Length: 339
Image 1 (cartoon, helix red, strand yellow):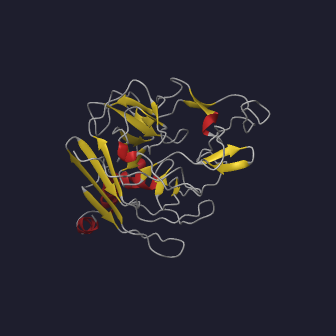
Image 2 (cartoon, rainbow, N blue to C red):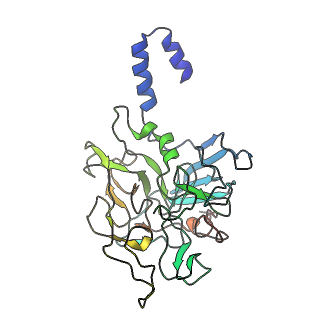
Image 3 (cartoon, helix red, strand yellow):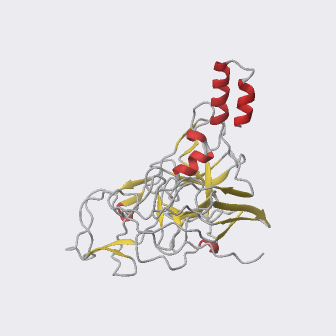
């Protein structure tokens, strides 16, 4: 690209060069990454050791899409350990599998026990946390009685050491996203806009059930690829009133529903553009005939918490992973059964 622009500069007027350069830089790319992608990481750990190179391989065979990676992002992550997250990033050995032609179920199913999905750069999507409320204070799930109040990572009420990409690190060294993967989005489409400065649909990964995941934007008319691309909104809203308190029979943290806990939110059908799985049916650049797809939004639930299809077992969580800020359980990625 740089060599091509230098050659053009020898023969074209300066104003025309500036216009053409801007168009080239802004042009979106909706294609998935090449079968093997490797990039040098410039980030360092807190002990000044450089991170391993980013590695991800995406292949398709026998009706499945296989995503193998070392879990190192293709953008510069925050520096870890950090306040709120004492863990260091380290390379992993992930092997995820998703169906290329997933089927939607009539009823949504909770993601309990599974990762939600994996980004195109091989980093897992895992919106859950292990932090729970107890009368004795905040504890880790499995280390105290669970009263059913789970802290949300992006509530702003607790510090889990999330970086600018809404990600942090498991005790196992696994870097993972809790919300919009901003660095990945910038790599997928410059400034998240097309050549005309308009929003564009951006494929960022695949859910464990195989349906694609997009960031923030979709067509105003879900079935019309010619309609405007707009910001999509979730249908979750804060509950009204106050939570139960310790004095109530069920026990609870008390206070107003303010988003501190996952349980502060409720799904209200058609309150926004998306269903209870934070997705919908519609056309996308990669699926012009239409598909069900999920949307990572900039408000709760951020990354979806329910599946429309059936998750592949390669996304089932496995230990270790408890014992500190970073999320509940290990990040799966076990090798799927041979086909």
